[in-house]
Length: 229
Image 1 (cartoon, rainbow, N blue to C red):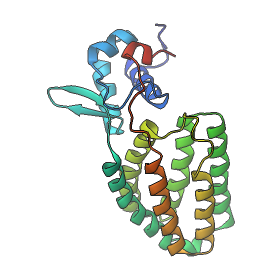
Image 2 (tube, rainbow, N blue to C red):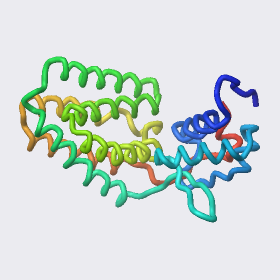
Image 3 (cartoon, rainbow, N blue to C red):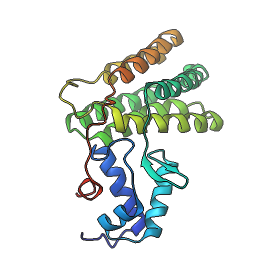
Image 4 (tube, rainbow, N blue to C red):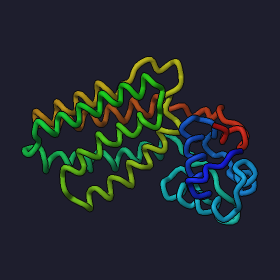
């Protein structure tokens, strides 16, 4: 494999594994042995270990003492628990900022929806999830509460990982996005200062999202093939 000399070996491993996850080449629970990554990418154990630690910090990988590293996996219960924490935090952020939203704020949120639609049409899962993150984190950062932002980021990052692993993004059964009309209605709820409507939308989004997850785990390949460009 030709190496990218402009990047460190650690960064190459980090990006390759993360890209394979977004492309659904590694199923949840897949063992990521140091030797298999070294062989596939032509790097030493030290950068592989460092990259796996970074991936674990971001929630993509679970490192089990005396066993090794595995692609993160979870089920409906864990994901539902994350939403149960996330929703009150987002409602709090809106509650304390509703009176300060400007046309510029709504324009930014609307632009996120346009990017979200484009990413879906191009079947770019990483870009799609980035637009969702931008949309919701803008709402959180509007509160200017660093503790709220920190708590939300921990929970939302884990949700993004599960979306990357389980959402039916690439399946033909997902003909349209439920997130686009939901995000449009979220903007309307904020504009109209309707917290009850916003809460209803977030709860509905939770249910639809989890119902559409694919927990079959029937995709993936061996490490060498998964990391090919």
